[in-house]
Amino acid sequence: MIRQLHPNIGMLFLDVKLPDIDGLKFASFAKQHYPQIKIIIISGYYYRDSEAVQQGLANSLFDGFIGKPFNISEIRSAIETIAPPQ
Image (tube, rainbow, N blue to C red; front, side):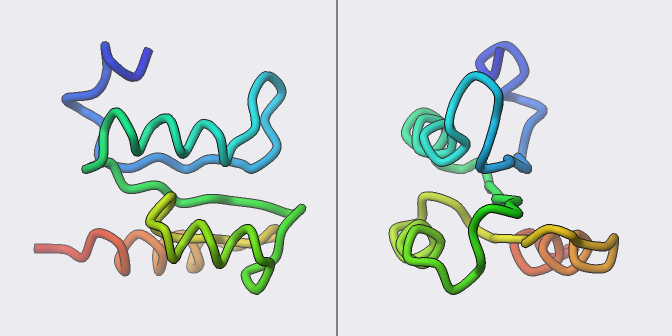
């Protein structure tokens, strides 16, 4: 599905816990095939200071993290940090 939509996708928001696949594994897949796509991980399972989150950010597996619960200003801030307006 990503391949069909790829030209129009610049950013993905992924939950760590998805029904059919681990969100971190999907982030790895997406980055391998489409390294220019920005990925923001959303999780109520991990915290920003969790080892998995810190490693993912350090290794550019994903570009941002938002912990649950979150509000719209956190989403806006993550987007502006990762893809600032031009």
